[in-house]
Amino acid sequence: MRLPDTWTGLAFACLGGFVVLRVTGFPEPAGAASPRLFPYIIGSAFAGLGLAIAARSIYASPGQAGRAFRPQADDWMRKPLHMLRVFLIPATVVLFGLLSPVFGTVLVAVPLIFINALAWQEKPWPALITSAAICVAVTLFFTKVMRVPLPAGPLPGPWF
Image 1: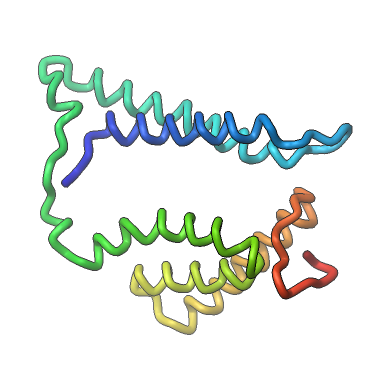
Image 2: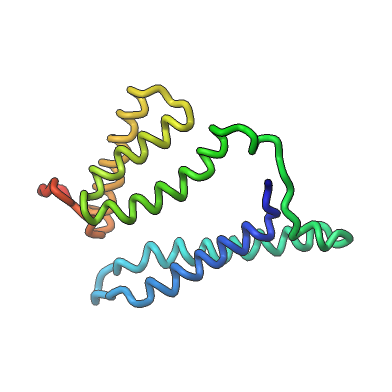
């Protein structure tokens, strides 16, 4: 089943609005970029672009108003690997949010990125190396450049 862009756009707009509302309660230290800056920018972009996608879908077919809201079934949905990929991305986001405060960013992100790479049929060794490299680079960027504290878990160190 393929959801029309109207529903997808509205879902992204709602998600972005939710993020923007949530980050307004984050602390804002004086003279520095606050922890709410990056999520606020991303949430605003989600909301704006989601509304643009929904509006484009509605106005793309003026003579077929009902089609902009009616789901369509596609052939690719009959393949289990394709469906796994669809559900793996939101599951990864939820698992990271639940597990990273307990186990830390690195110990959670590396396996999750690795599993996603395997789902996209990447070879195991390049997937593992890439997963570790991406995780370390992103962690260093957020902790050192953006000064956003990420959960360290059981791996405390001077670079977290």
